[in-house]
Length: 292
Ligand code: PAF
Image (tube, rainbow, N blue to C red; front, top):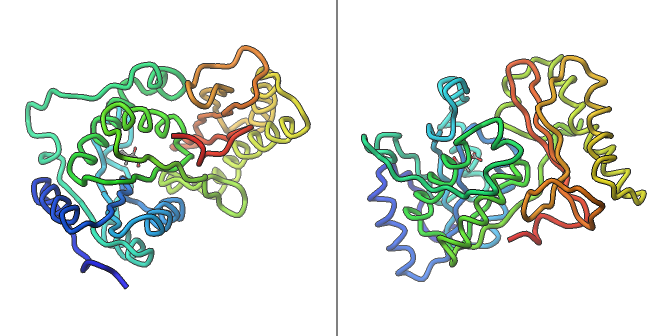
């Protein structure tokens, strides 16, 4: 039984006022920030939020500042009505769906940069991307006043950037990472999978296959990071229509590339398949719920 009636809020000031009221009433607030186009991965975040809070807030905002000039901002999939119906089925209480002009009034100049963690991996290929992410999530935390926030492991670098931003700027917000949700065939769920034709979907399975191969090596005792990277590269290279952007085997806390055997690692990759840029990763020697 919901503690509060469902509502959609669009104005930032109204969101902040509502969150303050809920806090004054002693409610524990959870936020699940998204750009919409919800899939089962997002729904798993909402269910995790439902289990840990009195009021579950979903934010839907396609954040312009995290897209580069040649990226897919204008064609990013949007389906607010479908998203809200699916989210309400997972116990959503409040949706915050602001407009870009209200989140970034003309002339906005203030951005949040999480320096070292934003540089490697996707940061090299998407300059400014993580500053856009950290900036909007900092605004969303300010407006929704959460006790706890949920993000997926699929965007591992984003998770580490946001955990670090929260620790330094919002020390009372707990940022929880939730495991990757995969299609039955292994493809990590992503809103960008909507860009794939069915042949491209089959090609994209090389990504999870490569990561699984690295995970098997690890389970058999392999700790050499270059062997782990090499294994992923080899599996992905066997599908010529997949263009690998990078393969990384890094320390899961600092994202510094491993130069020697280690007791934990995150092996990640980004690749282009057709019109989609896809990312995926596997965490070795530790669990995502142990990161904070
Ligand atoms: O992961 C996403 O959907 C976005 O990067 C986020 C965290 C909602 C910020 O816009």
